Structures are given as C-alpha cells and as structure tokens.
Length: 200
Image (tube, rainbow, N blue to C red; front, side):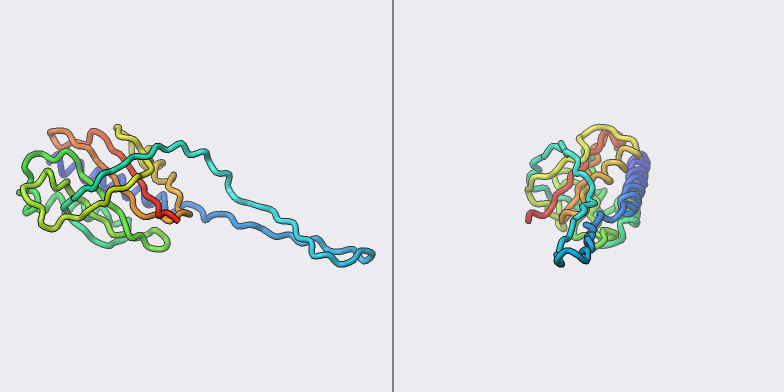
C-alpha cells in the first residue's frame, strides 16, 4: 500500500503544479507611442518604442545529459489536470506490476506533445524497462541534454510547484521528465525534474 500512497501523493503534487503553471500571466507586449507633430515642424514619422518585457533572470540551471531510457507503464493524451488518473492506473496495473523483477528504483513521468496552451499533453507514467522481466510496449525517451529544474533530493509540494513555475513557456517546450526515486519500501526518497526545449 505504500507504493499506492506514494503514487497518489506524487500525482496530487503534479496536479497542483500544473494548475499553478497554467495560471501564469501571458508575456508582456511592446507598446508603441507616437509623438504628435507640432504645426511649425515638418511632419516626422517618429515612433518611440517602450519595451515592457520582463527582465530575464540569470538562470543558472544546470544541464544534465540523460541517456536513452525505455519506460513501460500507462500512456494517454489527456488534460494535465488528469495525470492523477494515470498514477492510479499504474498502481492498479496488475499485469505490469507482476513483471517487476524487484521493487522499482524510480517511477518516471514523461510529458510530451503539449497542446498550444499547455493544458494537455501525451503523458507516460511508468517504470524503467530494467526493472521489468520483459518490456513489450516500452516508450523510448531519446538521449538528450536537459535543463535541470530540480536537482535530485527531497522536496515539499510547494517547492515542486515553484519549480514548474520556472519553466519558460515562451520557448518551444518539447518535453518534461519527472523522476521519483523510491526506497525499498516504495516511498519517495527524492524527486528530479528535467525539461527539454526545442532548439530553434
């Protein structure tokens, strides 16, 4: 039952984080102010530009090279607010849980193919194929360099929520990977969140 409790807690955290991420304000736009010409002056087409863009933070996020990884679990294209459903399905997936060779070392949550407003995505919640006796329908996470939003350690739900707010949604978000590291008793020991943006 500890695995089920850990999965439900993690899904509640994910639900909260995505809810906060969707409530972020839209980026500011440049405002154009035209200066009216005086009657004695020749007409000029003078336009002063006032920029109202947020100051960019000096983001010191580390990068991490993640090698190709195969995970098997439950996959669906759904609203990000419904990811908790996939966690429950993973916990109740007897066919998959019987294929576990040992207690899993981690549970992976792989988000990709985001909608235009990031309210839905294709999500896979599952185990590494190395923890399973056989992986027939594995999802492959290609090798890539990721920005580390959260380094591997124990976090509170509010810290996880803050990390999701650090995602730059103005860039082309390609994928997000949450790695929940588990103890021998299937309790979450640490969490790591990685993000990959499409290169322009």
